[in-house]
Amino acid sequence: MAAGIGSRFGGGIKQLASVGEDGSIIMDYSVHDAIEAGFDEIIFIIRDEIEKDFMDIIGHRIEKAASARNVRVYYVNQSLTILPKGFTLPAGRTKPWGTGKAVLSASTLLDKPFAVINADDYYGKEAFVQMADFLKNTPEDSRDHYCMAGFLLKNTLSDFGSVTRGICRATDDGFLSGIEETHDVKKLPGGKAAGEFGEVDVNSLVSMNMWGFTPDFVSKLSDGFVEFLDKVLNRGEGDPMKAEYLLPNFVEELLQKNEVDVKVLPSKDTWYGLTYKEDIPAVREAFKRMVSSGVYASPLFGD
Image 1 (tube, rainbow, N blue to C red):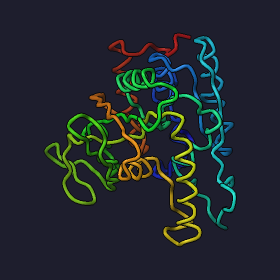
Image 2: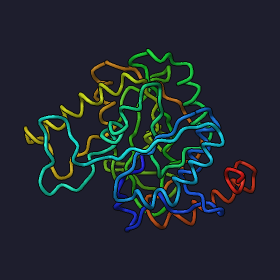
Image 3: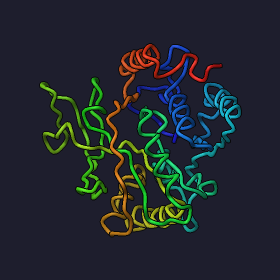
């Protein structure tokens, strides 16, 4: 998912910021790790406004690297105006509809088990391997059995400001039992953290929007979007200018209805992301260390 506006980034397109010495961006590393783990199709969800920059900075390069590895690449646009029958865009709305709508933009291509990630988040090799293993061992006609990569909160915080994190609850046997969207999570002295509701355990599992789904999820997501729009646009339950249809919120709804189960795939890898422009130097240094230690080659794809 690469259609986000990145409002906290202070302008520019944060998904396209270079973090590798060879010019690689975070998406390059995600694509590399996904291919290495066994994924053989890539779908980029973008928006019209960034299409040219996207193709110039990453699209053409990824197409070449993917083709050499027999991996197919697709592009879809996350449209603001294309809505289900009976709904129209509220006058004045410019904000995208959220990650749930983003996935629906690719619905015609999602006919087999698939993973969803954010373009501006680095997840690490372990998460992709676990996700691929789960999906490979999931029959294509399986229903209602999904997975989520779970990261330790302490490995996902920025040094330069607060973030929003989905704090997860899991059962003893490793299944997701709930997600609490928590805003204004920030580091505290002494290795602690706090959010809008007070101190948060830094060893809590959090969702970073890395999900594994089977094709049946798409119809559920579509039905949920209709219900979301009805609430916001017809029944006044939300701000029609800002309300977003978010994947974690929808999965939480399904969990509370006992309609699905979601296996948590715990990862101890450190997450890296570009929430703020000030994050860039630290993220670049992290990738430099990973290249030096042999985790990645430079150039990344050996070209």
